[in-house]
Image (cartoon, rainbow over all chains, first blue to last red; front, side):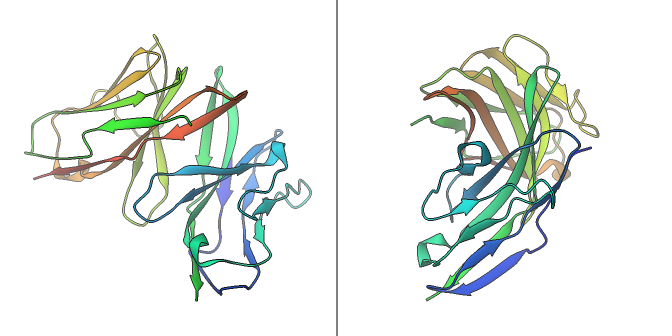
Length: 111
Length: 117
């Protein structure tokens, strides 16, 4: 069965410092991976997806199939980046997409 | 952008009563809708997946007779918690998946806080 692991519940960094939120997955097929973000008192929203290989709000994430990882990175953290971040893996089952979420990492950027 | 709404935002009900939560995709057609449950400081737990016009598929451990899901149209799904008990108190989040700007994506509703007294 597919599984997503985010080892850190809380990550605190100073403003301007680099950020790396870790995500590892287990899935035997070709995964489709995402990062979702939930700002305080807001709904969950998509941050980025691995297939688009884009940078959103300065964040990037590279899929490493050898290490089965999809870590989220940003070179210089900003206070507005403080939020909950969820790594997610999507697969197709029975004709529809099913998404499995990690347990989330709370990013706290210290001014 | 694509928006998913939920109603009500929060509800308090007495033990033994039933509660219905609505989820709507406001500006796109949702071929698939998902219902999640989130406990405090925990991740989202998928409860069930429903495709428009067909029966929902429930995850292991989720009672289908207790959590009734209806996906009657491409923009509306409902979750009914029947004979609610205090242990059903939780934050329920729906998500709708549809084709928006060339991508199939999931958009999340703001959630419904259910408190059973």
